[in-house]
Length: 504
Image 1 (tube, rainbow, N blue to C red):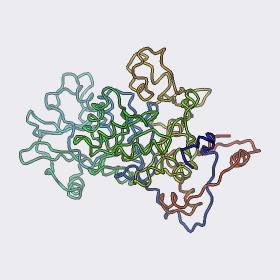
Image 2: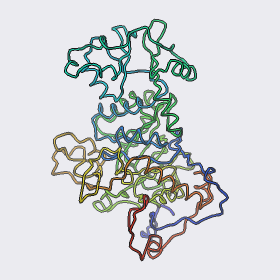
Image 3: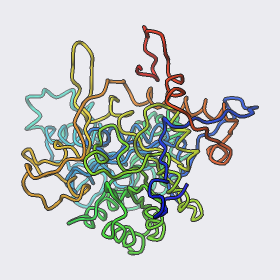
Image 4: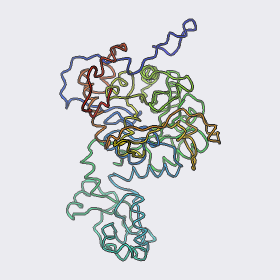
């Protein structure tokens, strides 16, 4: 396949998508424990499972990003938020599960219990070091201390009246993980403040983080033991300020994200991010593209991964509204022709309906897949939960939908993804997506288990121990519409739904 059609045969370039192909089975001598789904996300980051949650405002905010990282994937925070709100979401993820909190949230002794309760809700944490004006540790206060004070007195009761004061069990700055574990166990502590020789707070270790590390052994973590998170940025207006604010908040991956990535302004943004001393150390993903030429442009700009997909999403109408796009299997393959020689991973974004298509995307040339509709029904997504005829659904919309791009009482930050940032009137917007709903599916852990279970089975059927082996050894067979019908359940009435198959 090639993305260069001959002038003599302008229709010779055939585009294939997931329903057009199957993978050929191969010899397998594998046991379930032999299969490793680890795959490269970017030049420098690998994930235990090759799944990303889409940067959509009904899919990924902090709760979803936390859940994704705990499962071994990555959540990409959407950018239909102010810079401050998106950076705050990054901070929430980084503070959720960490080896050592190097910048713990503290509170002063003169704060009221009402302020303490507000701070606890804001950061979703239950205990705080109490510090004086010089940042010296003078006590610890937790939500347990609130329970013994009537709520009516919270506004007038100060933290220093209920806190546990010094002397406290503390650890020195730079303590090792093993030594911290010994102190936590010996003294049965929930929190271990870390202080310097002058008594100033330098960090905090919580026993919860040790428990979470054991509970989620495949978690995607950075070098400091914190959960990893990605965030989407654009190219227009304050995009540079957004990027630097996200980096300051601790983001691991920036996704330079538009519906059509092969655009000079976005390519220049990636090039600047990868060369500017303030940003060059963060991993940058460029997208979206659907051709070899588009992928090559991002490779040349220094992107650490390329995201592929123009119009395949279930809520996307780009191909219908504009007449432009490439079927996803062909798009991924074409992009891989530019990316593989350069060692740049490919992300297949959109169009996946079943777990079997993860393996198809990988064989076509992808290293990871980004999912929207398959995750939109999860408990952790920000979409609203609605009840229709006794069944639960969650709202799901495209970032090119009227709902995402129109103001509706607040500023939309997603219009520039579809190159309509300068459209000031909502009735002048040309949408490239729809608003809808998907069935509620429960917690992400359940959905991810089925998706990765399907990939495990793909790799067993093809005899592939690792994702690189699947990429190298996987072989396609093209199928007809009759074969597709044969692939699905047929000639029966389904009475019990399967957790990994929604119907036919």
